[in-house]
Length: 133
Image 1 (cartoon, rainbow, N blue to C red):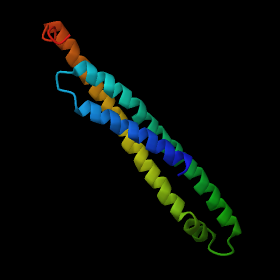
Image 2 (image 1 turned 180 degrees about the vertical axis):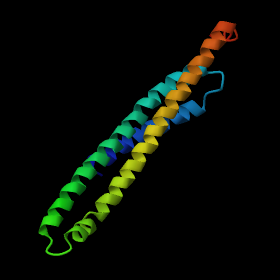
Image 3 (image 1 turned 90 degrees about the vertical axis):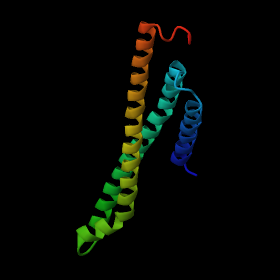
Image 4 (image 1 turned 45 degrees about the vertical axis):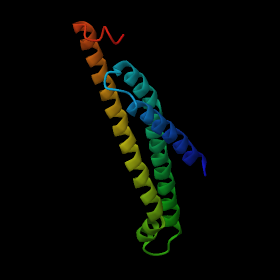
């Protein structure tokens, strides 16, 4: 397992761990839910960043390999170079999809946290949460 896979596994484990804790909470535990979602958000953000970095590194590697193969080829330079980078292109696309997936998850959790904060504020203002505090 390389360094990137290890970082992905570590952060994914943490995301899942917090998800289990969040699912165990009742709907009334808004403050605890905000706290746990905020902790989970750190690991979601890290996953998004890892895949973003991976995507950019694969892009650079693909461009470099393309150029090398283009210069080495005798005939049909462009076709030879494209064939040489096909696997890297697939990996790059996969990293981009994962980045977008985790970036969307990040934004979704931020929105959920903000919605919960708003609900807590309303509960406090109307006094409905005085028994829960």
